[in-house]
Each structure stands twice: as C-alpha cells, then as structure tokens.
Length: 129
Image (cartoon, rainbow, N blue to C red; front, top):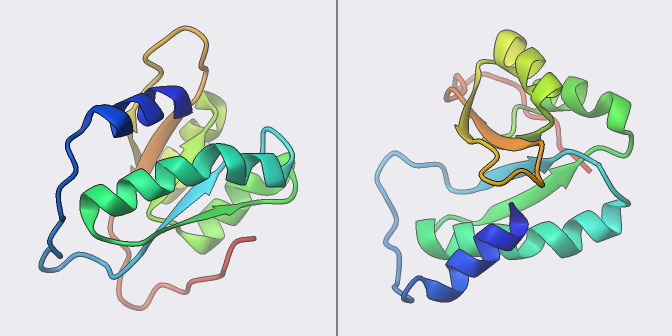
C-alpha cells in the first residue's frame, strides 16, 4: 500500500488544499506494528505527508510498541485512521465502529486502512506512541 500511495503522490499535480469547515484540526493515522517502530515511521511518513498535503490537515502517525496490544490501544485512543490486518479489522469494526475505505489492491498486501465514525465531543483521547 505504501508503494501505491507514493506512486500516487508523484503523479498528482500539486495544489494548495484549503481548510474544510467542520473538519478536525489534525488527524492521527495508527499503524499496525508489523515491523520495528523506526522502520514503520520511515515507511508511513510519506503517506502521512501526502494526506496532509492533499487534505490540508496535519496527519500524525501513531503505533503500538507491541503487535498484541495494537487493537486494544486503537480502541482506547480512537485515531481517525488506522491500518489493520483483516482479523484486527473485524474486532475494530465490531467494537469501535471502524469502516474499511481501502482494501488490498494487490495480492502482496493482506492489510487495509480503516476509518472510524466521528467521535463524540466528550470521548477521551489517549496519545499513542
């Protein structure tokens, strides 16, 4: 997915995004810790930069230190975007209201990206790593 997103970033003409009414001031993209955390940031920073550029909203990357804790931490912190393994997505969909908006486009990937329903103004926010 990261390779696909990077390719799209190089072919989309640059434009200045304008802030949109009723949109959050920033978004968090939670990434499943499928590799060492520093490598995840190397891989996913271009994705966050692309989304920031296109939407005009800063996108911050978050992850969990342990693969086993990822879904629990996502459900606690409620990031707006999350990258899941399909099995984790089922739990996040059932327990957290996440909806898939990107599914694997090529057979090399077994994960997809999801978004959740908007939070209530009173929902607590716990920072991810």
